[in-house]
Image 1 (cartoon, rainbow, N blue to C red):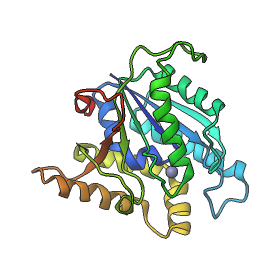
Image 2 (cartoon, helix red, strand yellow):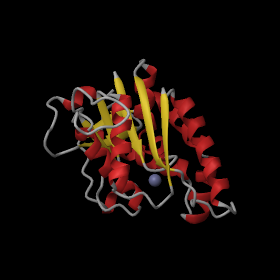
Image 3 (cartoon, helix red, strand yellow):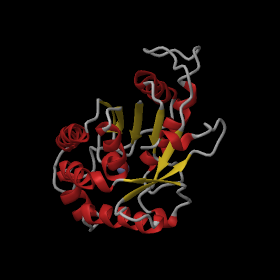
Length: 243
Ligand SMILES: [Zn+2]
């Protein structure tokens, strides 16, 4: 199976759905990643945008390697400044065409605190359908089908409109998820700690344990939560595409 996960920032994919993506990779599926922005302002310690962007790019590639991802597409828009433009839509469409996914994952565009999350999620949502339209021309040929799409839990779920309806048991890969998260050293020490005042690893542990508690399935300790995209066209039996 071919899996495509599209996130706004280096770290979003691993922190939000790293366990699910690792499960796909472990069973031999091809996992493609898109990161739309370069994270070049997310630091209180580094002096230049170029410096932090380079650190973030390296950390993202290290984490993708731990995940077992096949390819990371780095779109390099400036952090906090991706917009819904024709150029951005075409680039996102081309990413979908390159990956030719059987299933897609993205951020929900629910007026998140961070505009990059909303806009990247919306671009992914548009690209899912438009990639299959042959008269829209990009470097790669149009896809043959519109895949199911799942949105992942936003940061700050309790005060968003996110209502998860699909749950993936990531207990067996929990340690790998932590390992992936730790690749993003500049995020969990510098940005998460200095700017937001929390430990990112404790935060994801609390979140993934919380969803396990909401499932109440024996033996399940860690869970990632998803919301099936709820607009036309839906894919019947979309749940079968989850690991
Ligand atoms: Zn983010």
